[in-house]
Length: 469
Image (tube, rainbow, N blue to C red):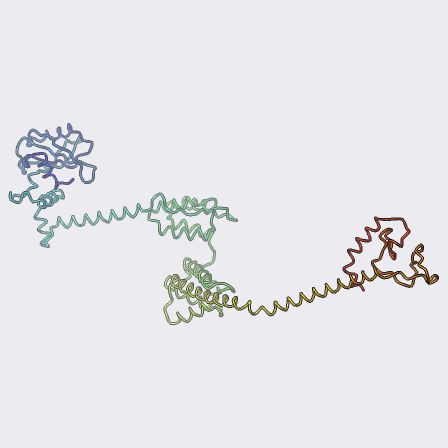
C-alpha cells in the first residue's frame, strides 16, 4: 500500500482521522513493544494503541497505524520519531492532514491521493502551482537534476550487469606448433578476442580476466610477464603483446602492397576472392596501412582489377558500380552472391537440356556397337562349326588298306608312322592313348591314365585348332 490509502485504512479500523497517525519506514522485524516504546517518548500522543501493520509498495518496510487518546494538532507533531542507536527514525504522517480543509471536499479520492503523494515526496501545493505556472523554484531544479543523475546511474548499473555468468567464453590458445587439439590458430583466436572485447559490457578487470582464462602455455607466460612489468595494463595492451609475439611481422605498407598484388585464382568464386581481399585489407587497417574511410574504395578497386577476365559476375559488378560510390562489404557480398546464384541457375538449365538431348544423339553409335558385337559373335560361331565339322569327318573316314595287300584289311598290324598320309589331328586310341588309330584297331595293353590326359589336352586345345590351320 501507499500513503494515499491510509485514510481508507483508518476508516476501516473505525479510527477518527484527528486521532490517527501512520508511521512509515518501519522495519519488517520491528516488534510492537519496540514501536510502543518509541511512541511513549512523545507526550503529545498521550496513550497510544497500535491498530494495524501493512507493507509498503517495496515489501521491505511497514506502515503502522496508531490511534492516540487525544485529538492531535498538526503543528505540534514531530516529523520523525525514534530512539537514538536503538530504533528509528520513522516518519510520522497525520491522517487528518491528508484531508482537505474544506469538509465538503474531504471525501474526494483524487485529493486524498494527491496530498498523500505530496507529503510522501516532501512537496507542497505552492511548489506544484509554481511548476504548473512555469515558474519553477530552485528547489524543484535541484530535484530534477537529482532525478536525472539517479536515472543515469541506474542505466549504467543495468549496462554493467548485462553480462552474467553465461557470457560467451574465448577459445583456448597456447601458441604451440602444431596446434594442439581443442585450440585455435592465432589469427582466428585474435579476431574473436578483438570482437568480444568490444562487445563485452563489463569492467576492464573482467575483460582482462576473461582473456587470461583462455590462454595456455607460452601465450599465458607473455601476458603474465606484461602484468608483472605493467600492473595497470589494459585488455587491449594484452592483445597487443600477443600480436607482437605471434602476429604477422609485415608492416602496414607491406600488407597494402600484398593486397594490391592479390588476384583471383582459376576456379575460385568471386565471393571467395572478395573474402580473401577483405581479410587482408582489415589486417592492413590494424597495422595503419590504410585509413577506415578508404576501405570501401580500395576493396572495390582491387576486386575489379584482380578478378579473372572471363568471370561474368565480375563483369556485371564492374558495369554496375563504375559510376557509383563503392558499397560496403556486406552490400557487395550480397550482390556478388546473387549474381553467382543467377549464373549457376542458367548453367543448370543448359546442363539439363543437354542431358535430355544426348540420348537421341547417341542412338546411332549404340547401333553400330551392337552390329560390331554381332559380327564378332558370328565369326566365332563359324570357327567353332568348322572345327566340329573337321573332327566329325575324320572320325567317319575309312582306313585305307595297305599297298601290299590291296584286297584285304590287316587288323593285326596298325598303320606305321612313316605312312605317306599324315595323322588326322585329334584321333587317338581310347584304349592305349596313342595317336593315329582307334580303339577297335588297337592290340596294345590298356592305359586309362594316358587316355584321360589325351582327353583333357584335346578339350583345352580344341577351340584354337581351327585358327592354327
